[in-house]
Image 1 (cartoon, helix red, strand yellow):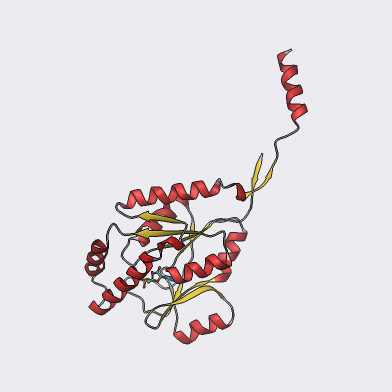
Image 2 (cartoon, protein in one colour; image 1 turned 90 degrees about the vertical axis):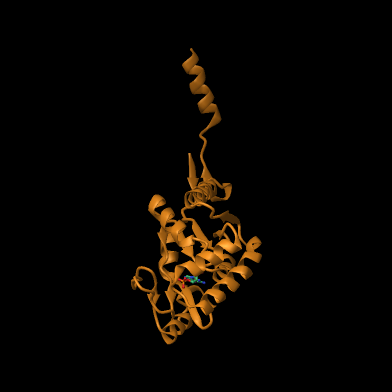
Length: 215
Ligand code: 5GP
């Protein structure tokens, strides 16, 4: 009766490093079967990270080649000299196929995508407090003190600009945050502007059938 527009939903999840967006995204993917884009980066792999699973790890020269060839949906120079970006081809292909796509990217890149694709749904994950965020960043033990400070400074800037997003979700408890995001997706799928056609049948025919039934 109602035919939805074929394009999948493009979901962008951002939030400060340490807000827990990685864990939340994993849960969403597991539960809803959404495909998450694999980004390209010039940062080196951390222990346990795998090429083509966590990121595509490339040199700066290779990254710039992809930009010049117009192969990136967006990219940003996130931390001093480190590039991160979303390869375009697979994202566009899947959206056109009606699949939902999730991007876990920072704010600058998220806003670039939103400009190109206004239908994208941008969700910002907030830590319960900035003190808690600092504690989580320090507790990771994967970065130097200088890098923790750099990530914390960027977090402060991002949190101040949260109003650029469509939704904000506080990650006090992972399961709460995941449920909220699921509710957002559900609601977005019901949006009137996702409807292509409404076919309700002919009123006279329906009334006529009803009258016959009453005889
Ligand atoms: P990490 O180095 O901790 O893996 O990621 C650092 C930051 O880069 C995170 O905030 C993450 O969301 C962001 N990021 C990861 N992939 C992309 C991407 O493709 N584009 C942009 N703009 N940011 C990304």
